[in-house]
Amino acid sequence: MEEGGLIAYGAPFSQIYRQLARQLVKVLRGTQPADLPVEQPTRFEVVVNLKTAKALGITIPPAILVRADEVIE
Image 1 (tube, rainbow, N blue to C red):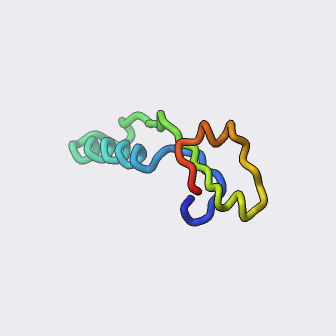
Image 2 (image 1 turned 45 degrees about the vertical axis):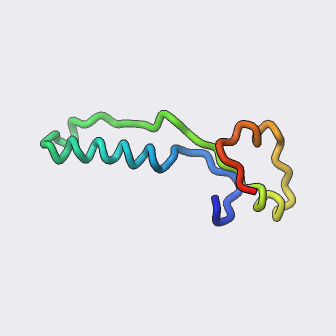
């Protein structure tokens, strides 16, 4: 988002990396990859870049800005 994206919605990379690390430890301890459960993120973030919105001439509604986890100005 810092590089010019307008709006992003997804799981934080830190959470994805933690899940990856937990599963990697299980594999290194001998668990077969086929026996590992599929894990999905439980937390999602919304990031809004107001600088890009202004450059595109778009007005982001205040309701979205209030719900955003991060607003880049």
